[in-house]
Image (cartoon, rainbow, N blue to C red):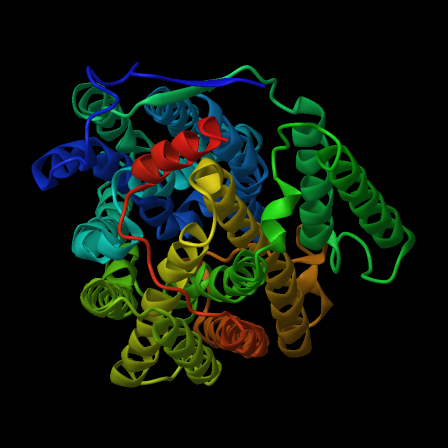
Length: 526
């Protein structure tokens, strides 16, 4: 195998470190792309109850609209990460944004839930590229020690996208001449703008290697992960957890993943290089990322439904109610990033973040349909503060521990496992929510209340319910939602135990590109 560095994206690939101005210019298109990816998930969140009602979907479909995008994103992240180590990162980001545009257009014009689910798969493939490649490009341009300096920019984009998304989504849903379809279409111009900005501002050298992508490994990983995610989504209501279907899908999924490991261990350029797990830091941050994904996504994705169904809020108000968690995340991630850059220490923020996240989960496990707003907002802020200190710094720790030529693989591995945890959390806990809501409503209203699709209640239209039934529905969704956080709390605690065993290492003071050149020089002299 040979490798040559070609200045494809820049006039001088051998130039030194990028100046702060050049980095900020390059980040402009990247940040617009990140904004689009964040907006896509948050703008739809408050629209989902209305979408499901208009398309006559069930609680199962509600879960699957979220799960299909997560599944597609999860399954393709390792492939995007491997390609980033081999091909032009700029071209790959633009390709992922292009796929996202196609998926958004299909979603905005969907006639039914089946086409909507397909569009979410396309969106998920594009989002997988953006999710993995944004952090890979950042690591290539900026030394780990200085990443905290730019945390404010990332935090601002994340905060604006997350705050603006539910608000925009709520306004679009509540505006009769626009409607929920514009929740998907609104991201299209932003995606196109990002593609143009990246073409003008992002200049990175490309390392071309004479290797082939391990398509067999990619197919086996995708099939194995998809099988397990589909099982976790369907078990408990389409068929029993302890059933022949469970045995078939779990054994089949694990067999596919076992075959993937066997293939990956024998090809020269695996999609997921198994040797990176020899690093204690990478192995532990990977485990923690799975646990964070399960706990965080599995609990919070249903908060918007709780706001609208249990508390009776409009989509716009539900968007405003997400502010405490987002502001907590924004402040804690920005402050932690600045302190890490200043002092070079990072483990304490992982430990503190995991501990605070666990406490936030426990607090949210006490909510009901009558929880006072100040108390609810405090609990959400606590959870946001914990997540802000933990999630991004897990990636930083892993990137700091691997050789430059494996930055893409290491970053995508963490993103992959966090997304997989999130997809498992959403699908499995979504099934728990649906089953629990059905059980609670059946207890109060009789067997007819649970006669929806697949044994789940159809997401109700609150305006059409009489007062006694309305109260029962609100209490059922509130109780079921709080129980999801109680399930997530011990999972978050396991993440805390995991990060305690991570060994802190000094942060590199050179960028990924500089490290790659140094490693190439050392290799050529031996």
